[in-house]
Figure 1 (tube, rainbow, N blue to C red):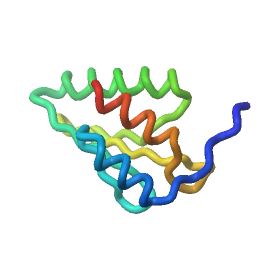
Figure 2: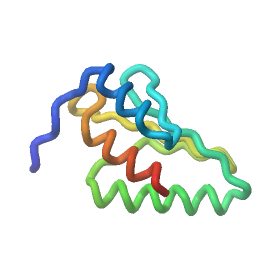
Figure 3: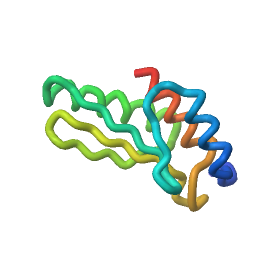
Amino acid sequence: MTPRPERLDLGTVDQALAADASGWVREGDRIVLERRFERFPDAITFVDRVAELAEEKDHHPNIEVRYTAVRLELWTHDAGGLTSLDLELAKAIGSL
């Protein structure tokens, strides 16, 4: 198993999010993205694309779907907070 990266300090996370216009925000020790779609199938298509990226990177967000709204939460469980894995996946998801 590949070693996981170390937890980032929150200032580093905040700087990275400020430089990225994809809509991720920090909520405590997690980063969150909320997206709304016109139709339910559009929301599910987005979730499917997120799932593909997550599998490629072997890093998986919590995903909540409420009809046309999708909420993603990222943090590295085994690091107890945010790591470079979270920022990398957030950037990839932001480009969808």
